Image (cartoon, rainbow, N blue to C red):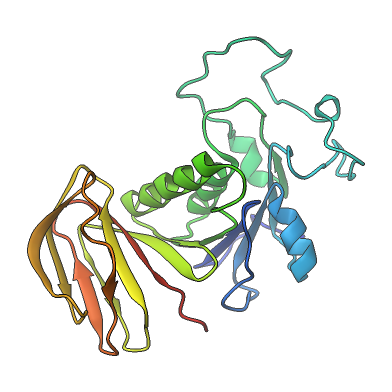
Length: 253
C-alpha cells in the first residue's frame, strides 16, 4: 500500500465496500485516495487495484492481527478494539469507533460492536484527509438491505458536510444535493429521479428534462419525483432548502 497520510493533493476518493460490485466506470489515478472497506478488498484484488488504506471490522475479509490473512474469519482471531469480552447488551450510542491514532495507519481495524457502518467510518477518514469528492462502490445490494439504506444516509451526510458523494449500482448512481444546483451535460441519457431526503425540500426546479418542474416542494413521504428523463439537452436541478437524493444512469468515462 502507498503511504496514505503524508501531505496529499487528493481531490477524489474511491471507496470500495463489500456489497454488489460492477467495476469502475473510470480509471484510478495516482492522485486518488483508494480505501478498501472490509470485504471490498476482495474486489480490489480481483481488479488489480492497490488501496491506500484497508479499513473494517473484518467480518467479511479475514485479516490477522499482524497483517496476515487468516484461513477463515474466526471472531476469536480478530480484535474487538476496546469492547472487551462479549456481552448480552451494550450502551454505545454516540461513541465513535475511530480514534485519532487511526489516521496514521495503513490498516484501520474497527471494533465489531459500534454505531456506524464500516462505510461511514471510511467516509469520515476521507473527509478528515480533506477529500471533498467521494465515489462509493459496493455500497448497495448484497444480502443486507439495511446497509443499502445506511449508505444513502451516508450520502446525505456527505452533502451536509459540504462534500460530493456518488453511490454506484450496476447501471445507475445516487448522489445528494443540498441547497444548490446540479447540472448535467447533453451526453446524459435515460431516467432521472429526485427524492426528498429531508421531510420537505422546498423550491425544487428541474430544467432541460422531458418533464419541467418549477419551484415545487418534494416530501420524503411522496415519491413523485421519480422517472423524469434526459432528452439530449443540458439539464439542471436546483433546490432552495432541503436535501435531495438524485438517481440517474452512470455516464461512462
